[in-house]
Picture 1 (cartoon, rainbow, N blue to C red):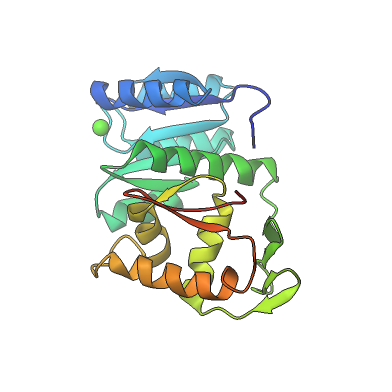
Picture 2 (picture 1 turned 45 degrees about the vertical axis):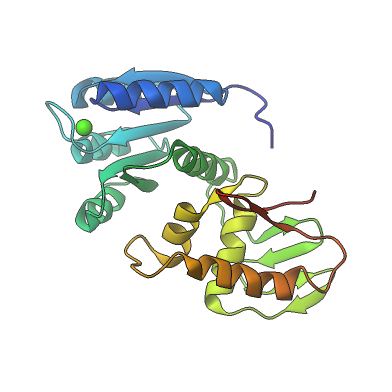
Length: 230
Ligand code: CA
């Protein structure tokens, strides 16, 4: 999972504090970071590339993020992750319509942005071909047939169990926070208790881990869950 060469990420964000925090986090993770603080600057920097990903705020001076996104898309296929204010569903939809690859509602945990960046980079590395299988150790999840097998044995999962397993496998070996799991598996607008995660993790374990000697799903106290070989 190590990155062979540093990847270049452009951060287009006018909130200086947030832009600086993102720069620190991304640099710390080994990315090369460029920054732009207005729409036009972001657009010209994005097109001047080469970037592996663009983090694009929606509310920007001089030109809004959606217009920037559309203009980038006319000329470039660079992955774009849009930052939106929390809960603004329409922004998310228009962001995706404008050609963004993903969106992230503010406020967000830096880990979550990093996970999204890794995901768009992985998709890009696959040339946007849909990945057919996720595999961790002897656990295999087929995205087309939605079949899950552990050590060759078919494992039956409900829809939510499948989505939870898929999310953990897709992000393996990184720890996913409870917030990330809740948003990505149950949806950002889910209003129920986050205890649902523990319930589903227990069910997943009983199907995927309990019958087998090697455990793959691990709790990280106070943070969340990770699926990996120890
Ligand atoms: Ca802004």
